[in-house]
Image 1: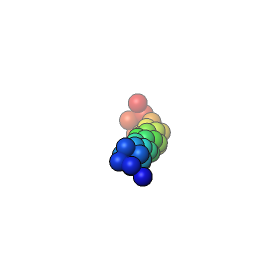
Image 2: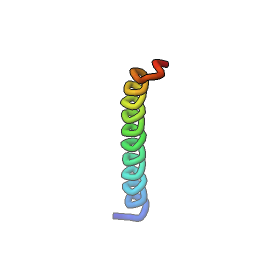
Image 3: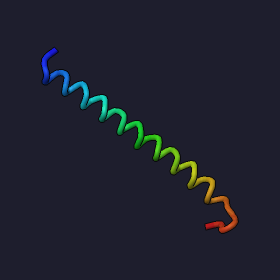
Image 4: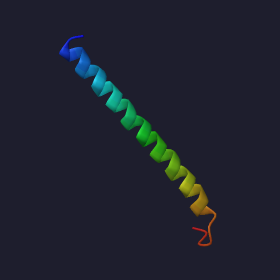
Length: 43
């Protein structure tokens, strides 16, 4: 495998992890928003 292909694979793996992290953060935020909306403050 040449260096260019190796670098591309590494970059794609990192990008995939970043996307998964953003997706997980968004899901967590939605869960927190749902919980907060029913709280004592009643927004």
